[in-house]
Image (spheres, rainbow, N blue to C red):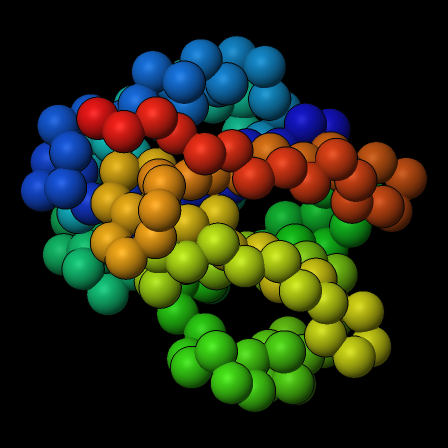
Length: 166
C-alpha cells in the first residue's frame, strides 16, 4: 500500500492551493494521511474526492466545520500496521516516550503541528512521522510531505519530498 502523508496545509491562509507535485501523487497512492490544520473545508472536500482512502484529523487551527467532520485522533490498520494520526504531540524533548505511553498499541504515529519533518522510532518500536507542511515552511528550508509503503507489517520507502519555492 502506497501512502502519502501531509499536515498543516493552512489553506487558503498560507497558500492558495495544494502544490501540483503533491496533487499529482493522489492517484498513485492507496491512502492519504492528513494530520490537521486544514483551516478550510474545501481542502478536505478535495482530498475526500480524490483519495482512494483518507485518514485525517483536525488541528488546533481548525474551526467547528472541520471538527464536526474529523476526529481529534484517527486510527487505521494498513498493510499489517496499526497507524494513528494526531495533530499535536507536545514538545520535541521527550516526544518518543510520551507518544509510546499514550499510544501503546500503535506501530506508526503520524503527527503535525510543528511544520518540522520528523522521523524517529521510540523505544518499543513506535515509529513517529511528521511530514512537515506542503504549504507553510515556517523556519524550515523547504515545504515538505512524505511518502511510504506499508506491506506485510513493515513500513518501507519512507521518503521526505521537498517542494520547490512558490
